[in-house]
Amino acid sequence: MRKNKVDIITLGCSKNLVDSEQLLRQFAENGYTVAHDPEKINGEIVVVNTCGFIGDAQEESINMILELGEAKKKGRIGKLFVMGCLSQRFLKEMKTELPEVDRFYGKFNWNELLADLGKPYFRELANDRILTTPRHYAYLKIGEGCNRTCSYCSIPIITGRYQSRPMESLEEEVRKLAGSGVKEFQLIAQDLTYYGQDLYKRLALPELVERIADIPGVEWIRLHYGYPANFPFDLLRVMRERHNVCNYMDIALQHISDPMLKAMRRNITTGETTDLIAHMREEVPGLHLRTTMMTGHPQETEKDFEAMADFILQTRFERLGAFAYSHEAGTYSYRHYTDSIPPEVKQERLDHIMRIQEKISLQINEEKTGKTFRTIIDREESDFYAGRTEFDSPEVDPEVLIAKDRRLQPGNFYNIRITGAQPFELYGEPED
Image: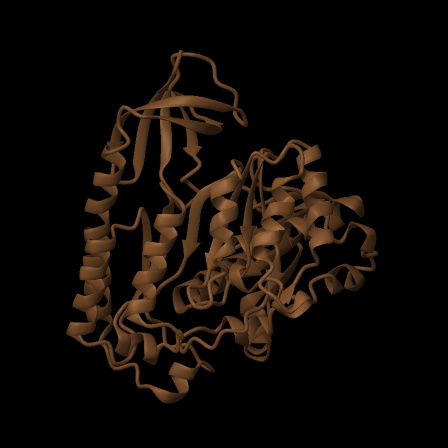
């Protein structure tokens, strides 16, 4: 165990990551040595930032806590604290079942951890953080919570109602980060497209993106986690007109058949969904769409599933992920439906969707062969560089792998000609 060291382990999404980065900053200001997801966990203080979205994520969080509990018993770590979505949702149960944890915190009161250690919380640094990403990109959380009523989703139970961050606060944070060398900003929230309704009584995401795009040093802005119903269409104009707003939109659709969209309480129809996608691609030529699909929601028939598969084949999403329905306590689905679809059927449908998408992804990547794209270099490996185009978000999208025939600097942009393609990777070389 290393004295005066804090290890923070983040599980789940990039929104959790921002919370961890803010906590790292507070600990550092209090004089601690800090580490995030270290290879060797040996801190005097260890904090696990948990995910509670679906069963698999919950299991991962619990397993990590149990593993660290054993390390604590053997004296390899000191105090063990747990925060985040899982403890926000199941606080009473976790206190009973995980006595090895010194204290639990939720998603919004983690700053109390410092007070319990007898350390101050520096309010003037509330939006400051120690980045855990490469220094040239950062996640920017523009809101917290969700006002949607999707049948399957536990997020509103965990986070409560939507709370937008004021534009001025976000602009100040972007200026500070851009001034320190951050060039690329991933805008994130449980629901980007609702931004502003609570504060400004209007859909204000287009204005926010324009204001951030005007800040010197901002090279790329990428948008994650939009909602299809009541989409703010002026955002497409901003994306088309502003060179530093990437032609990329992450918008979770979940399904396409009308019976399932109704059962899921998605507030959109099949026709409205297809019209939205057509309008988006017409307004923003070259737009890359990322979406998510769910298999095995209660009442999903083979006909519903076949409609989803056909929709994916016809639409050819540039990026697509999928997951199997998880019967989450407290949700509308949990109260009103029986989780009647067997796990093996859910998995078969999921595997089928991803096989379809693998072929589509390969075709779309092969179409890029011979073309040149502005590419940011994320890192240097032993025998290649790894970069991304404007169509690729960190961690979830294809990378461009570049042979080390010449020196490239991580964090810088280069014109890279694509020389080869795999379903989830591109290969390229710098243009002379």
